Amino acid sequence: MAEKVIGIDLGTTNSCVAIVEDGTPVVIPNRGGYKTTPSMVAMAENGKRLVGHIAKRQAITNAENTVYAAKRLIGRKWGSAAVRSSIETMPYRIVEGPHHDVRIMLRDQVFSIPELSAYILQEMKILTEEYLGEEVEKVVITVPAYFNDGQRQATKDAGLVAGLDVIRIINEPTAAALAYGFGRNIERKVAVFDLGGGTFDVSILEIGNSVFEVIATAGDTFLGGEDFDRRIIDWLVFDFQKEHNIDLRKDKMALQRLKDVAEKAKCELSSVKETEINLPFIISTGRNEALHVQTKLTREKLEELCDDLVERTLGICTQALQDAELDKSELEDVILVGGMTRMPRVQQAVANFFGFEPCKGVHPDEVVALGAAIQGTALTDNSCDVLLLDVTPHSLGIMIVGGYFHKLIEQNSTVPTSESHTFTTVKDFQTSVKILVLQGESDRAEENELLGEFILTGLRRAAKGEVEVDVAFAISADGIVSVTAKDLETGLEQSITVTATSGLTDDELRDMIDANQDHMVDVRSDKEFDKAEHEAQTLLRDIEKMFPDVEQIISGSDFGQDAVTKARTVCDKARAAIESKNLPQLLECIEALGRTSNMFRGVVSKTR
Ligand code: AMP
Image (cartoon, rainbow, N blue to C red; front, side):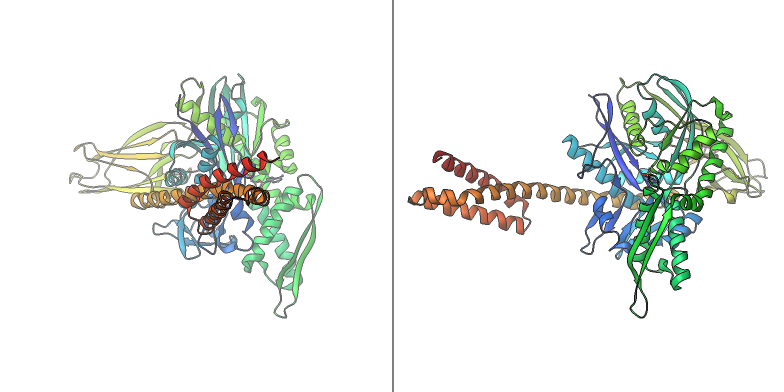
């Protein structure tokens, strides 16, 4: 039987994990029974790392050390607009990393974004292992279709740090389409409209039985529910400032409370027309007077605050249709994905734009993970008959003389793909050539995303135009780029896998994988301890309940007295092992407690 592959939707707000069981994709619930887990990581005062719901629960009181929406920063460069915006609005400290990358400071420790994402992936891995009762390693992780190479590479690094073997990175809308069409034997063109917590993607696909072919994709990796929340926060902050002349954004705890209440109000307004926003004691004045936020938000007002955000998604849909060279009327279905598509205004805008009601048959929070699990199975199990053909969202090329961008692979080309081009030297006696690898659509190199650079040295000294260098680009099915440059005369070759924007060098990555493996052992022994403690406490309660009866029954005999004393000793030893968190000792005690409990039961039942 093929090894199990898990599918993980590593979301900005929530993450979800799925597997295929007996041919059916299923989502694995977390320990609380929820199908999604908050993508949050926190550092508690005692230095303990908290992930998921536990991190979310303490976010207000530990705002500075609780990370959410880290996906908005993954693979980004220091100084970019997205990073500047996050620095202004996030309660946690965003700092510059050693490679112009972004890091986050929690208490006095600095973490890379792939590392923080790894903690969430690891939680998903552990949940699956607990569910299946066996180890899992292979994973398909989803990313927004519009993620560039740096963001994809950084996500892959996160998987490695989590101890996973990332067999494929796939695009979220494509995964959703896979789950939508899997096993249905349909032939049609569809659009996937995916508005999540942090990103927006739209993909146009052609589904033909079990072949899923992406025709075009477009998106914005900084447009999602976070921006809708931000509009509510800004509105609350503005009114508060007008009334009290105090900027609530300066207080981290107040900011976190505003974020919580804004998101809650936004979600409520998907089912009611009006909601109350109450934040008692949000801040106190210099005169020690407590101030509160108390107001009403209507659905109409929310729609007015966020109207331009919804309009932006529609502009991107127009772009995708143009790129696909299709008219809306040629589409048969629109699949809504991502929590934000629950907002009535979004659903209405999509219906108006495409001219028909979107499909309601898929679960917007689970469909991406389900699709990832299907793709994982398709890649490892020959009997799973699914073929996925995806595209690269951005054009790829290099900078040429004059600061222009020379495209080698056009956006929306099917991946994997490769292309090469021969360039010549531009100066007499030029012996080296620097190659800047870029991704984007602008003619000007500096307006595109720099993926990395490398220098090919040792060229023959010759007049300009005489030496020829062949540059070959390849994009893997993961959307990850590699480049080779070759001096055609000498055959001298250099290749790079472009990793610059992941922000981690190979050595750093290795160190993180090692460090995290230690942590994985910790997490597991913690879990084993919790399980053992639960078992021991159940037995202790059981024995304690029977003690009075047993003592009364057997106290007459020396043997009986001895047994009771021994039982007391075993119970005390177990309590001491729990107290000192001594797992080996506790496991020994459980055996002894089990024997005592059986013996007590025997005594009690015999006399009844
Ligand atoms: P996702 O990334 O798909 O998990 O989507 C998360 C985003 O969806 C967050 O911004 C949530 O606040 C938002 N969301 C979840 N449920 C609703 C709802 N009922 N109405 C509006 N937005 C929602």
